[in-house]
Length: 210
Image (cartoon, rainbow, N blue to C red; front, side, top):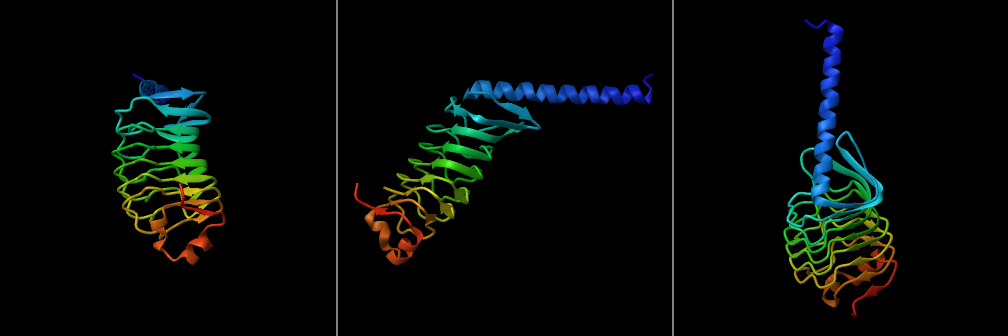
């Protein structure tokens, strides 16, 4: 019969085994579904790769992660041209993020909270709303060629770079346009919103001729 000390030690051993087993399963999921250019760490169910690029290779995958983990900090994260239906589990912080050409994506819920270069959600044919987008992007945001997008509601509140919403056929105006330090790329018909309001929002140029 185990004494108390032996019993507690056995519990600790079991916990270590569980953590190790979970890590093995996470690593297998990453290996099966992603190409990772660089190193990463796994701790407490968070995968961090602040100096690495992670690209989804299993384009039939519908969810970026499983119940075992989430992405934390990643330098570059690409899940473009895939079957994903949600951005849940996406990196919390990232330099470059691309989910373009994801035909099943209807919103940006679960998107990174902090982007320090580019956020690209172009050519997502079912994307109806920008709800879930980062509030602030230290760089560019591109939601062009999204034919189902009906409003900019949910768009970042401020960008230090450029904002593009070209060829979004269901978009009627630029209400909810972010504060933009760079240029705005849009269609002429989008300028039904008061031009004086738009000019106050855009520090750079308003470009409509392509």
